[in-house]
Image (cartoon, rainbow, N blue to C red; front, side, top):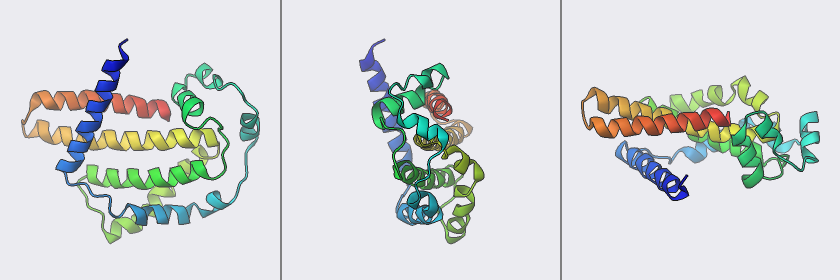
Length: 193
């Protein structure tokens, strides 16, 4: 496998995502407000350091290949190269707050909505979903869930953009390429979840 081609593909994917965001006039100016709300909502997790029994075992783990045995190569790559010590106080929860806010904004744009006061008031429903608490209980999962959430939100955003182009019969070939990129993003996001 030629790594240069893989790198070129991911760079082209990044350019396409940026172009789609710019074309739809996506603005992240209210992102700090959402991040502040998320940090306030997750204040207990950001200020308390209580670890589970799984985290206690993970502290002393020297070999992260246990994730490969479970078929979770996304978490293996993250714990091996991005955040080698799986049990880091506060940082994974802060990253989760940032990615919850970012993905909420992307999801709104994917559905053709703009951030309003009503949608800001609805944000606690999204970030208070009980599944996030269960997934963030184990610190190694938190980073993977965060990345998976942003990737799946971005995939939905690209999918909605591709569907609009297909419906309008514009650039069928370009839309097919976007759908293939969407498939890659979705498969990566599922792997990280």
